Image (cartoon, rainbow, N blue to C red; front, side):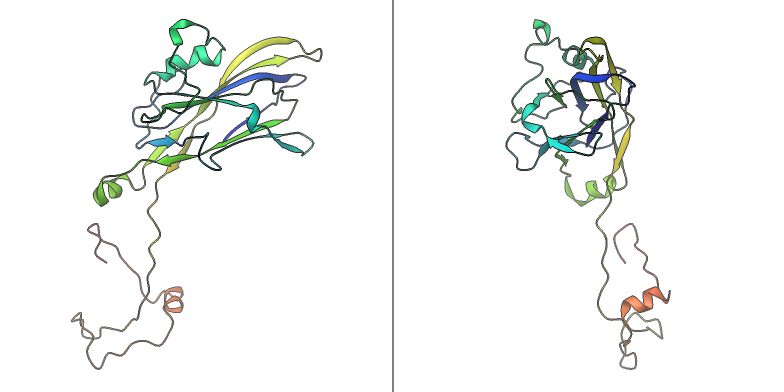
Length: 239
C-alpha cells in the first residue's frame, strides 16, 4: 500500500507520478542509488488481469472517498537500473527516445517487473486529501524446506518516490518536486505451530507410556495457561 498526502499549506497537488521499486536482494533506493538491504524478492502480480489486484482510492479531507482506479495508467519496467531510469519517467520525459522500451504499459509476461509506476493523469489533491494505492505482490518461491528455514525472520525493505506539481489558487503550476517516502520493512514469519493430542506424565523418564502412566484428563490449554509445561523446538525440527 502506497499513500500520498497533500499537507502543503495553500497549495494543491497535480500531475502525480509514482514509482515503486519492488524489493529484491541488491535493490537500490530511487534517485539515490544506496542499497536498501532486502533479503528476498517480491513479484508484482498482473494488475490488469488478476482479480482485486489493484485499486486507487482518493480520500478527501471531508471524509468522502472515490475509486479512481480507471483514471490511473500503470507502467512496468524490467530494467535492473530503474533507480536511474526512473527519473525521466517521473519527470514526464517519456518522449525522450533514450527511454523507449524501458517503461511498458503492458505487464511483462515471462519477465520480472523490477518496478511499477502509476500516472494519475489529471487527478488533483486538494489540501489534506490523500491517495491510497493498493496492489498485489507475491513472495518468491523457495527451493525446499531448507531455503524456507533460512528465509525465516528475514526482511525486505521498500520505499517509493513520487513527482508532483504545486498548484496555486488560480490553478497555475508554480513548481514541481520529487519526494521519496520513508522506508518500511516486511518480515517473513513461519506459520504458527499448533499443538494437540493427549498428554501423560512420563514418571520414570523412559520416553514410553507405561501401563501405570495414564492420560491426563485436564485440557491441554488449561495446563499451558497454568505454566505446567513448555515446548522447545530444536533447529532440526525435532520437538
